[in-house]
Image (cartoon, rainbow, N blue to C red; front, side, top):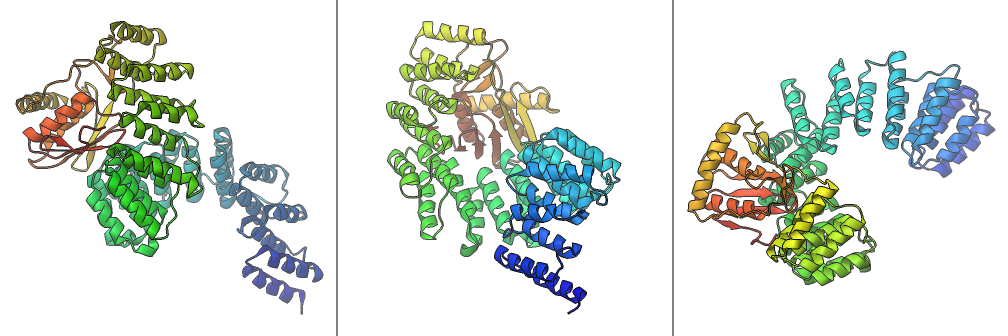
Length: 588
């Protein structure tokens, strides 16, 4: 057989190679036939070793080092292989060698794309800028694929402004570029901007794929944009993408986090049993958990096991959350222990937080304290802050003081923590302790976290902050709020007087940044919703902090006075207000 025919035969065999053992046999045949210097064969051998899941990066390096002057394709394979590995720094080392040492090879679209992928993993913004310079000088500054990779790299390195600038300057944008921006905005918590990208896509007649819909649904879930989520659901149905399991999971998550559990359950039921994965089950279990439906979360968990699906640590977070919000202490403790004893899962800080919360809400503060002190995360401020919150619920001065002492020891005290303890002191008529907290806040110079609330009206999300004067309709909002307050008062609402600490321009109740006479953000959102929606329409509000006692009472009586269903998702859970009653049973 002629050498050319042998080479073709070996290349054909290489295309069907699916194991490293077989590759070694093929390589031995290459050497026997004297074809080891054939660039097409050596490049193909290298590509398998570097890129295939059955390959070996160590062997790829040996092959690469034996090539006298590797072509660009060979450099791309080795850079790609390490960019996908646990050693992305080596990908950049080879990329640097290509630029400095190679006589014939030059970087191309793939070289830059793979190198930028490594930079994403390494979170190396200076290197991203350096590669950007090389992209421009080598004439790839208008390449759509390269610009998309560069945009994503800037965003993953925390420079979303650079990413957006590049995106806006791209001469042509494919769907991958749009998806990259949506994904980056969503993952960075800039959900309003992700949804703005969708509006631009609509205006420019850019279609959606599964990646677009999943990214947008994630943002809808975070801000409670049910209207837009329903619109995306309709698009998914029209395009057949609703059958995609990732889209289905995102829809379940969106509906559950927007307060529509019935729709979430409907999507879950529509996914074929054999196509449901652990994320499908987790979305429903977590949905029941944050709505305070612990028994339903447990029921779904048992169904999950019966279906042969193995739970993971996320499964137990939803389960423990549901048990905590429904006061199912015995069940919650049992499931916490099952994590390690039955499923060989190590509880993390969030699981211990759920257990502390479970005991604390139920009033078993001694057990909550014991859980913290025996946990591997006893020096995490989150656990002590949960104990402090439970101490406020049950007006326990001793455990509240212990929690704050440990927060001070860890250097993690916030103004909200001090106000929580001050509230406990005020309830116990402990005036000296109250004064001590006021002095501590001034000494530490700590500040509260500003509270905000989102409400969606006609598929547009409106954001309100405390004493908001920046909203274009703020004058009408305050006029409506005055009317709403009067009607709620007639229905039985009595304003809860806050604890006043004389903070410089702020007050905090349960983490909210307010002044005693201020309008909490959810009150403004409720007033705006009542003014802008027809009678009988449900209002859905998302806020970043735990709802305070006064706002909780206010919303209950508003729902009664206006005969409206009001759904509020706070930092901790959902509250469904109907006819003066909240689904949490005032246990939150």
